[in-house]
Length: 177
Image (cartoon, rainbow, N blue to C red; front, side, top):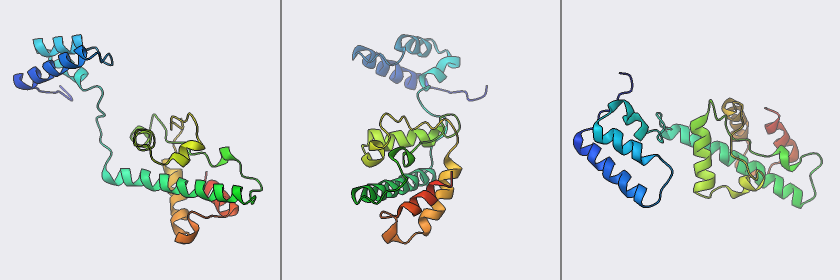
């Protein structure tokens, strides 16, 4: 059977006890009774249910770094925009123009989930969240290749300009969309 999960009796017992504890703690996120029953009776077909909350694929260190580079680029866009706005040097850009859209939930799920984890759970890049209130970071269309093209241009800027871009530079970056 494809993607079969084999658990020893010892592992099954550990999961059963863990699920009983979680259930008794009032955690209602999962159907613990059915998971416990599947493990008790050794219904291998349903072991997958125990691991439903886990993604099958991991996000590699390199993939995490790409997401972090993208977030850092948006930090640069946001800081630059805030500075220009404070100095009354904005002609056409609006808050929604610089809004970080996130990643496609269907095709870039790992990147979207990592973004949520990093921004929401770890409480980082609050300036990005400020310009995207209520954003679930699901763009509903593929964004990764566009962000990567933007990154190439952003990385070519001198370090002194990455967080202090002109409106023209920001527009040029965002035009890649």
